[in-house]
Length: 240
Image 1 (tube, rainbow, N blue to C red):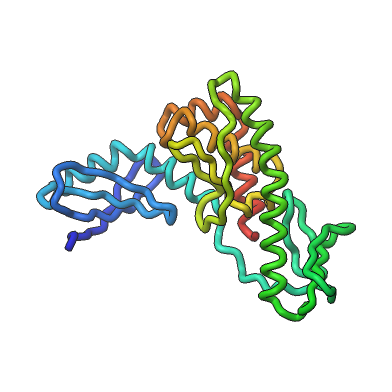
Image 2 (image 1 turned 180 degrees about the horizontal axis):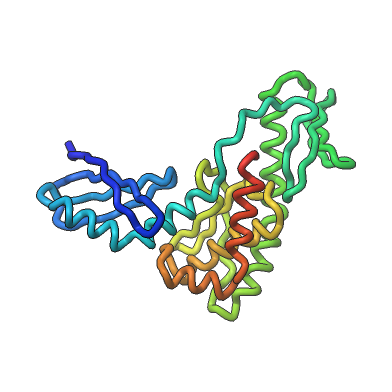
């Protein structure tokens, strides 16, 4: 069983809390998980000062990782899926109207999200109908935005990737070394500039696979206002 301990290190005005897991290994390794937790995997006999020095040295990278994962907003209150509830699409809020209908159908009409269902009093049925609609809209609209973003990055040697969709709890997208970009279906709820930021962020991983200094230098070059877009994404989507 690994031996665990908790400690902190200061870096500027930031305090990094980290868990040390001591294992039968030769080197130190640091991981930042989507929840923001920092874990240091250390040899059983590694001195505490050596571990602390490693964390301090890697502090800029750790803080960038935590900042990235913090971009998914606070946990939203549970949805009730009843008429009058607000739901976002492409950054705009639409009020839900649940109506009786012979077939399941979802449409945007005059500022409202109309959901027709045989069983209009079932929140689970409304939830499933809306989730299906969001996925359909994501699969239709997001590839167009990916095309435009990839076109703008051609001069940096970045190509249009293979695109896939999924629903993630703690990330808006990811990029695999096999050249596949995964986007969170819920990204279709965000404003267009925020969607472009997420896509551009992931496209930059085609050149830089981690969140090191070279990655952020590239992101700054291709999207100088990415910080504002990221902050807007966090602000707008925190209640989704």
